[in-house]
Amino acid sequence: MTLENIVWVYQLKKKMLVAVLSLFLFGSLVAAASVFIMLPSALLKNSESMTQELSDTILTTLRYLMMRHEQGVMQSIFDALSDDKDTISTAFIINSRGRIVYSTDKAEVGTVLDHFKEKSCIICHDNKNKPPSQKTVMIKNMRGDKVFRNISIILNDSVCHACHPKEAVINGKIIIDRPLKNTEAIIRRVEIIILGFGAVCLILVIASLTKVINKYIFEILKQHHEITLLYSLIERLSKTIDVEELKIIVIDIIRETINADKVIIVLPRENRQYRAYIKEAGKDKLIRTNVQQNETLIKLIDEWHEGNLDGIRMSRDKKEIYMGIRKNDKLLALIVCQKFIGRFNEKVQGIVSAISSHIVIAFENAYLYKLAITDELTGLYTQRHFRYIIEREFINLPMYKDGISLVMIDIDNFKKVNDTYGHVAGDMVIKGVANHIRNTIRDNDMSFRYGGEEFTVLLSSTDIERGCRIADRIRKNIENAVFEDGTLSLKVTISVGVANCPKNADTVRELIINADNALYEAKRLGKNVVIRGEVKTNGS
Image (tube, rainbow, N blue to C red; front, top):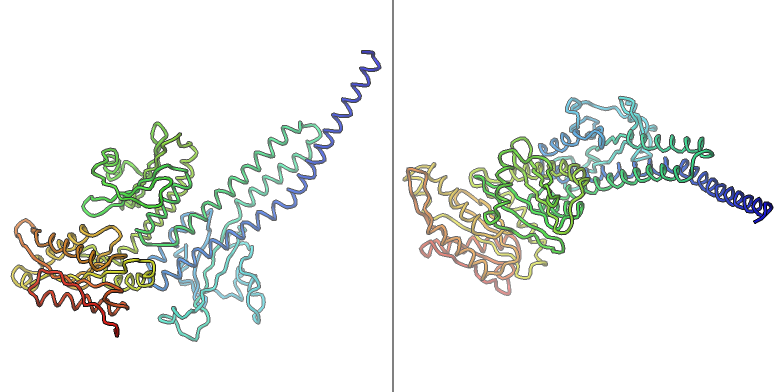
């Protein structure tokens, strides 16, 4: 090759390199400019949307608790929210007169806000003659930090009239401040990166710059994913405060989040007893498992009960993750996640740790709610909760092929027990009968203390024949039982009435009356028997 040809090839390579570098430089500058202009706005818009979604989720939960007059539980939710200042810096409810009634800062409760004088209120109430122009606004709080403030109106719906005057339009407002420091920190980091890139792009290698940009873009996407996951978790957990429903939601959330092949959840009962449930990948149903047949699980339960299995732990082979869920000395749940194929990534522990704090709050609220609807002596649900559940079951009645069966139970000659042995012995018998009822029925059946020595069992999707079989099983178990307290040994029997909807009744009232009449017929016929309700006539 001649010198002339060598020079020509060199010039061609130089031109091609300059062209490629110019193309990369132009594209990089255009991309940098686009990100610099659009990213801050997009992140702030996303943060505003997240604030709105979080407010709506909390408002839904609080409206449910307001209707049920669960003021203590409501304040506990605000106390829990105050633990996570990065998500919510301030949250409070004001009534229609501007008085703070619930707050993450208990010291603020009772303070009255004047929305035409308070700096944080004037932004929305800038005109006395028109309503606020925005629902979510960016303000500076009392500490000078930027926050997104969301104001949601608590309307005076018809269900609120039991506690609030009908003529009132609103009952108050829930106000939530979500700090912007994390979002602003991300924006500032990106801006610094882009400005630095612009200053040194002429001397740095395009590949190195791309690597740096990709690193921060990945970080942004990762944080966005974690925020989205967190709000999705809060939304799903806030859908219920019923322990039985919550255990299903929690298992699904964990299994989906960490891609576990099998999840076991253990819920504590009285006297160090437990119930364990399993859900495996590809299966829809939650299956109850026998704890006594799983030696490994028993050891984990004992370790958790002794306080040596709190927080998150991964097994040595990285195929199992253990979550001990407890609040102070209160055992809430033990969760075991298993991987059959492959292993858990160590980074999963961070995700599970973030989830566990919200699961603790959800279970704590659920157990507080269960405490409020549970009879103190027997541990069964109260009569008031029975009224709520049976109304709910009638709403779900079209989904039940065999309808709903109601079992009403009364202890025979209970007055004689009280008169002969005293009320302490009577309480022992009532508690013992309740335990036999609870241990005889299925997991999805619900038992209630209906009165002094009277109980009810609600059997969903159960026809009259099966309802009578379950009732007779309860009767036999109690007939064969001996109730002892160390100094006294007693035997009792029960009389039982069973009715079914739609076989015996069409309404809640008719079902209760029919089962009650069957119970009294059992008493009349000599007691210690199960009597089914009368079949309804065509005219009934």
